[in-house]
Length: 230
Image (tube, rainbow, N blue to C red):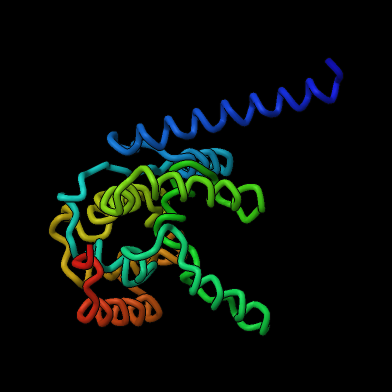
């Protein structure tokens, strides 16, 4: 066997192992809680390296233990077509590309809840083409293997909501001293409002900018009912 064929065979084996392992993890997390993610470990490592106090607040709860106000708030804030698309909002992507070509500020919203969930659970933060390609791969896998409710449940439990704060329950306890199940509309909107930059923004007390986002999200929640579509 020539050297080229050996390399080719080795690469195919690596691809097969990667596909098998990734599929196993996707199927596993379809049924079992995600107690830790790569981002949590990376942030913890950054804290230790920089000499900061280690902070990692995370408590997994079922979606039944999370207020529907928060589910609706994050959909209104992050991905209003969540219940209808297959992981990718191509209209939002097109708008973002058009804005980039015109030299205007990049529009938010091109990254869906499904994409963010795939990134949070299986990958690392970054903007490389390799990571983006893997994000597409895992997004397709979870859209096939998980229900929309499961994607939302994992998202709400794994999303970064502050410095060392991950998931709805930890964020609710940290900012409002209550269980995630008891969040009001305004409190849920406040948590959703910080998602663009959770390490810089605070849900409570909110800055003037976060207050304006809260008001916009609450307004969207009054008129939008995506959770009733499917």
